[in-house]
Image 1 (cartoon, one colour):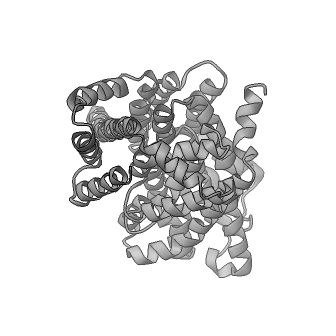
Image 2: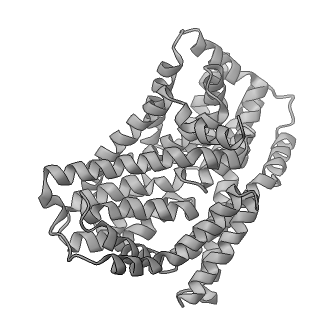
Image 3: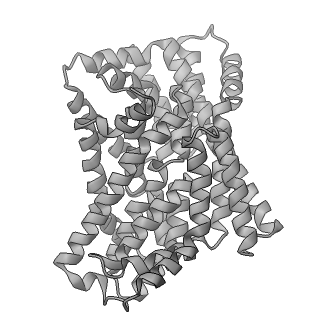
Length: 433
């Protein structure tokens, strides 16, 4: 078995290190292991079966729709509406408008499902506005890097859909489980910003002119389209009216309507959004085919059982196991993007977590937060790249600015490991347990 494990990581390092696409690298690794250790198995037939079973999954239908919704919303004035609608309410709270990025990302994440899209959409307005108003540049970019990752945790989430399909778990339960951790993590970011501003008021510039309560209410009208979209997508799912796929279709329709009403979306823009969504879905589909093919291959070879037994023989406590997995995933995040981290290692780590007493819903949320860490871990962290394009700052400066939010997120992982009820509370309550 040691030869199989050595060959697994050797082939993976060779193929992915050569610059091959992740999906093709995973397929090549699986095929190579079959040819070396099980040459009698029909590798091509197994690949075709796994590709078909993956792509025709009904749970996966929501994925392209949520991606299309994010692409359409990126071409609307949602980001401007978030700023004008929220700023009158934040001008005189501790931290002032520095909370704009966190609240804006939290609200946009509830209809987006993509970390990069959340960061880019919210950041293209808030970053420029806050910096021009005298807010500390590092505080702005750091909070945007951290809060932008909420696009994966606050449902709907494309990562949760992929995990749900691979782990054969309810996507709706995963969505429900992400609500409380997502809001708690957002509140943690805002608490940090408030404390920083209290300790050093110069970080947040001068307070804006006071506005009356009536003016604040009037400003909320700018949030109307986004709130209706949130109600249509989230409300229809949690109200039992629509499945995640049907809710995604509702969201696409609402997003197109918003773009048409705002006169920011024409036929050419819609076609561009559809083409970009198709490209993203093709990339994700190839990665999922490769991951499930490799997972099936490893199952035939007995690798997950072997590694799980070896690690269990170390006698680690469940909490220590999660600490080890967290460190392991953080290291992977320095050289791989989030989706690749999940699909490549899931066949090995999921059995470990379930054997330690954590259920698949909890482990899914754990993985999503770990992927958030990968989004702000250099040199691959995609959120950092998005912010660099928006601000023109160096990668080193953006990374240093994002580090406090990295530490907050890592600490939050340990918190939910100590208190798993943070994740399971809402799903259990809604299922009547």
